[in-house]
Amino acid sequence: MFLTFFHDLKRAGVPVSLREYLTLMEALEADLACKRVEDFYYLSRALLVKDETNIDRFDRVFSQTFKGLETVGDAVEAEIPGEWIRKLAEKFLTDAEKAEIEALGGFEKLMETLKERLAEQQGRHQGGSKWIGTAGTSPFGAYGYNPEGVRIGQDRSRHRRAVKVWDRRDFKDYDHTVEIGTRTIKIALRRLRRFARTGAAEELALDDTIKATAEKGFLDIQMRPERRNAVKVLLFLDVGGSMDDHIRVCEELFSAARMEFKSLDHFYFHNCLYEGVWTDNRRRHAERIPTWDLLHTYPADSKVVVVGDASMSPYEITMPGGSVEHWNEESGQVWLERLVRTYPGLAWINPVPEKHWQYTMSIQLIRQLIGDRMYPLTLDGLDDAMRSLAR
Image (cartoon, rainbow, N blue to C red; front, side, top):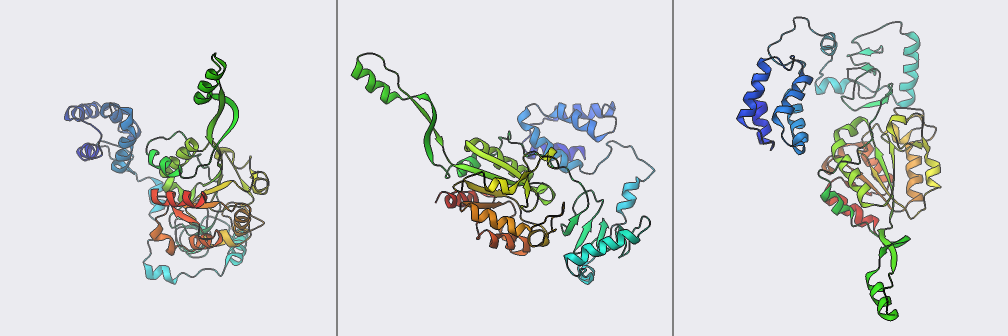
């Protein structure tokens, strides 16, 4: 395992030497990592990474090599952790078995049945096809399978088919300080530019200064406002759930946009746009901004860029109460239509590869609602999106 780790680091471009590898082995023999993966991570990083620019590559290789490992070394625990036992209850059904599991008959019926089950059930249940519990094929619970269900008490999404999620989840803001890999994204974003000189005169106007000095016979310094990109951009970012797979590239896009556009306001949402958005994911339950206020605050010539995978239950778009996190009085479709009517300059950037779009119903629905202005999160896709917005 450790030798594989060493070779993977070299293949990833981390400049590690045999001497450093042997030093790491000596440190393990001295039990400096105490057989804990977290301690081993910091120990190996201190010994093998000589330049902080290689930390990101080191982290990716470390995660791939030691994913799921709790201890290092030859320590063996006789007792099997309870969490392992619980997850062994998961059923990995065949395609034929999955095809036999019928949906309950629509969103309203699903929520009505959940209410009845909550009233009837008296205790914990595992397996089976009816009660709220773990594993099994019931549409309510965790670590099982049903094509249309309500996920309750599960660590994270597995099949991405839940109609509603009965958990409070905390999301993390995208890091706008990320710089690695943003250069080419910034080049693509530069197609959306409309320069103007506004604000205070704080830049030297060299040609005007030379002309004024020649006319007056003494030095006459002329100033002018700085030439800035005058495009006003509203950036809406989907966070959490299936978007966790795309955090890295979205952070790079966010960072590039913050650097490229002087007038940019960003807002977060989850899965689909509803009546409220937020700017701080840590306080998203307490400090929401009404979407209606945004539509009446920012001028219609603002350029709107929505970043999201558009992958969700179709109910989240078409139904009141369809949101997985709260009860929305109006459907996501209504709010998307309002956004499109208010801002003609709109583009949706999707991190899911374009070749997969046709297999997801929610992506097809959103593409239709926004007038087929969805673009893949690739350099060519960004280039096409910026050209469309610049018209």
